[in-house]
Length: 349
Ligand code: NDP
Image (cartoon, rainbow, N blue to C red):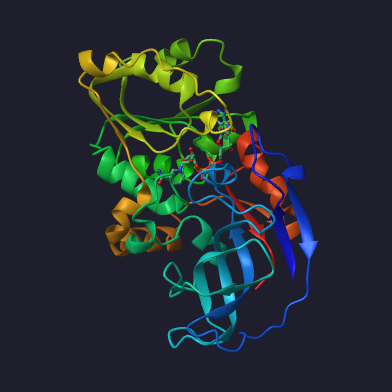
């Protein structure tokens, strides 16, 4: 059983050498006396920014010398649980390894809709379970539900409003932009390379996009794209971008604070200086965790599945082939190497 092991707790930017690939032997059967469990073969693993937090010595963190864990799509190889049988495809919490014995199935779902790429369950279609995430404070995966809940529930968008999305070409951002266009908004995204900017404009239908790394003055850049200001900011990065956005928000604007990836590897988070704009402009800034909205998953599916099948929503994935490329793919998130949702294929279906 090939596994990706966390060597020790991480400080600063994670490196590939913080993880190691280990191979051990396992029996492909549920051990005697292990009731209500499943043994799965992992197929697709999700790389998510929140995983950095779990590499630190914090509550709910990974255990050094053990495999990383995260969300993935797997096939049941053996089962002692009446709800899952051999051959079932499931989505849920699993190990960064070829085979995982799952004894707590409270976050596992049988995959019902198989007429879409199965890897989409690591991104666009990932489901949430309230009981599992009740105490989740560091965010989670589930980019589709995150974009849906953050945009429709937190931002309360109206047709014709101006929307800015940071980390716009990523797993969450690409969907927020497309939802905003479907709503009839004017949408601009920022990303860190020219190719990503092209993707935003030509594939996801953003009205405009810019490379934030090429802008000396983010405030001036935002004024260029939003001469009359921003109604909605979907915040994925934090730091300097947030500071500049605050200066460009319109009266009664909304900021959905989804994530602040620019801060995750810093020992000392950057200060934000323009918060006083919240008062003068009556801005509502609200943090959220997608799992708070787990009950909307059926409604979300009802909306998104037809959109995927009719080609009205595009979903770009960045596929890393093989578990051995998992560490590189994961740390690539913090350097902006991924183009779209980062997935690791452990084994093809
Ligand atoms: P992405 O697919 O967008 O990957 C991360 C991207 O972040 C990179 O590709 C890079 O793109 C950008 N990035 C990395 N470092 C920096 C930096 N220092 N400054 C600016 N941008 C940076 O990830 P997700 O779509 O999965 O996640 C996006 C955000 O949403 C994250 O902040 C994440 O924590 C959050 N999240 C929150 C959830 C919630 O429930 N609240 C659930 C899921 C995600 P670029 O080339 O543009 O720099």
